[in-house]
Length: 87
Image 1 (cartoon, rainbow, N blue to C red):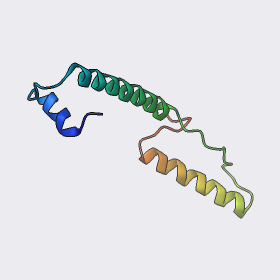
Image 2 (cartoon, one colour; image 1 turned 60 degrees about the vertical axis):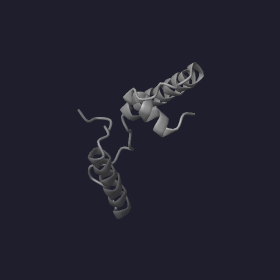
Image 3 (cartoon, rainbow, N blue to C red; image 1 turned 180 degrees about the vertical axis):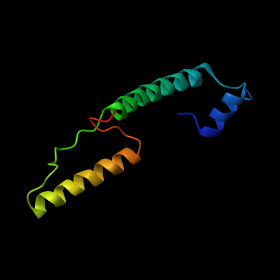
């Protein structure tokens, strides 16, 4: 693994003493990072599915449950994630 200062020098074009082995290691590390990034993007793109709640709860327990699910939905939306049924 190449340290951050060396990476910054390579990116700036200031490092001419980089060996082919270091470049190969850097390319492998970059490929792994890109694969992980793609995986994370796919996970974040999935819509969140929350349980169904009744629009007219029949007891305090159901009302509390529905309020909790609705609060969770709102927090998830504010965080920028989609919930199943959102357009």
